[in-house]
Length: 135
Image (cartoon, rainbow, N blue to C red; front, top):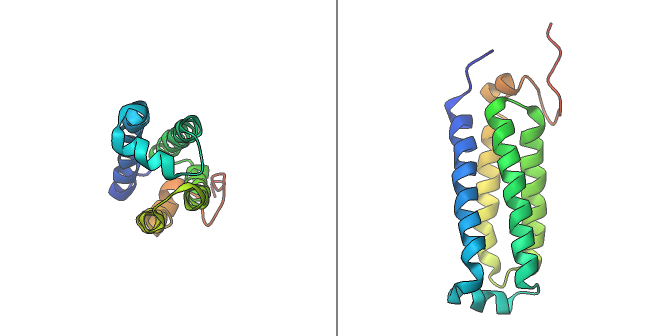
């Protein structure tokens, strides 16, 4: 097996760390006055926000695992979930310009997920969900 590119190792572990921070934020959201004030401006309830956050955390952890193990579907899932998250975020967020940072993050990470080195690590090209057959 080929050595995993450093960029993919960093991306995988960043997803894990960001997800852990997000889970902490979800756990303390109800008691945080700033978060409570922002939730009042959203079109959704605290329970929906927590459920959405838990689902997103689970997807991010699955993506991180797949990226670290070289599973091609993980990078497709990351991009698809990122786009879905942006659409939902645009609907529920009271501060739309914050989504620009999420979009930039998604585009930068996606660019790294489809470099030649990443293609070799995943043993796939484009939006393939399975590895290419050995020659």
